[in-house]
Length: 421
DNA sequence: TCTGGGGTCCTAGGACCC
DNA sequence: TCTGGGGTCCTAGGACCC
Image (cartoon, rainbow, N blue to C red; front, side, top):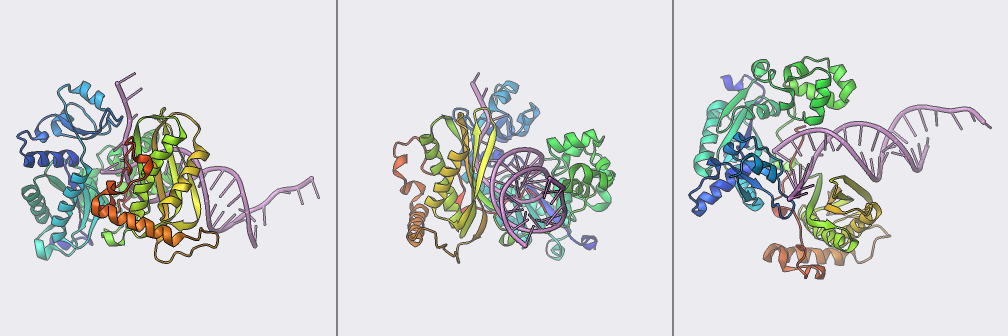
């Protein structure tokens, strides 16, 4: 009966060193004899393209003090024989989907939280697959045997505690964090181990003499609310293991925004080149928007300059659209309004504030050939789905300097949440 | 010789309305 | 010449997540 002691049983499944594990499994299947997981190795961006950071690391690489997000040349200084392999996002998406398909057998309520994490509502499933810990081991071992990589499974009675439990000792482990275990298992941890407590928040909390999750849990809630506003209340609740948010199965989740951005191989100093990059980004963003059967009401452009400073400009549209050319026209205007003329390292395009594409009321002021433009876009989309993104491209890309479409996962998009609420 | 790319949510300040 | 106040919308920026 212990499985029904609590109102809910939630599991959090987290792939250990996801990108690196997946790459290792793939390479072994391809016939490689070397297992990347067993040597100091990282999945990293290309240094030549100025994307040289560590995206994922093996356990032996971790032993050298190499961290995710670190620049590659620094990582090499820590470990000269470090092996770096490029990222293959399509492969990772396939692995993620395979994981999802397997876990789906154990509950109808699964929330994909990122490419390598998901929440499973196991409430009421005990009669099919046994007690939570038993089932968690079964799921974990099946993933290892059938898919070839390891995961951690955290079990709690809400998403927050399940996620914290999943972060306990790795790899290939099952942990629980039930209410009566919170003070013993979670409170001694440093406060920055709590979900949503990043560098800035850690600094602020330390100034209040809060160093552990337990100290945060036992701080006056009003004081936190004064110092950190509503966010103070959120993390106070988390520190006390309080979280009522439901596991939301994909169908109910709505994308709030779609964006693509890219770091350019060289600093851009002229409008013509910037426009080409922006067009390439807009093509993928608009394709994804249409694939989601949505229109957007807000368009925004982000610039990162060579000093790594970011700024952005956004605009509310007169009427919603999913037409590539309309989005692009706004993108260009926004860019020209906000660019300060410095060297550009990185550009981004994002659309937000969605509505369904079914019943768009064309405004009187809209261009009259909307239907034709929509038809053109969907014809191009069809060709791209059928023959690949390179099958149709704008004339400006013929010189091959930039890809005609930059970024985006396309048809496999699923909502990703950064907040569990 | 140099820091990615995909997201969500919150807040502050200004404009504008009543 | 006194100088309101609540509410909403829009935009920019920052914090956090993976």
